[in-house]
Image (cartoon, rainbow, N blue to C red; front, side, top):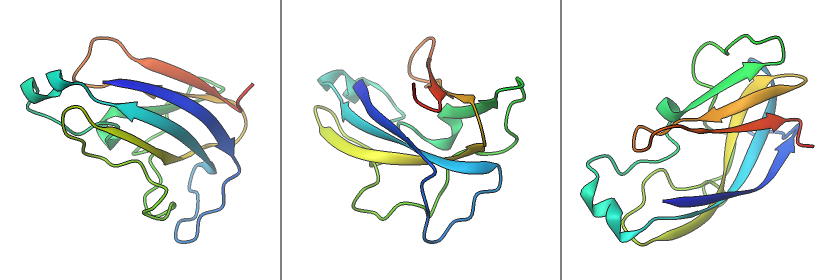
Amino acid sequence: MKFTVKSISEGVACQYYQPKNGQIITLDLDVETTAALRELSNKKFFTTLSWKAIAENGTTVNGDPVAYGCLDSASQLPQEMGPSEKATGKIAFDVPAGRGTLIFESIAVTGGWEWSYPAK
């Protein structure tokens, strides 16, 4: 899988979800899977188990930072993709107000990625 974070937006308003942790941010992503995806048993990416948020003071957000019900289905990134597919979409997160870090650690790879918010 290859992916690119095109942008991070802050202060996003949700129609059916009210933030519990402080604010809503979205990541706008381009995702492309490769043929090697056939070899993995778990084909779900960017699931709730893959994400965590850490506030500026170092405190990890309790619970799931993904804000379900925030984005309409046309703008959401698919949670499941097959081999050799491409998708563009967003994921919404309920994170503490102010600065922080959003972390993605997939069970399919070693290591992970971090993004600071607010975007610089």
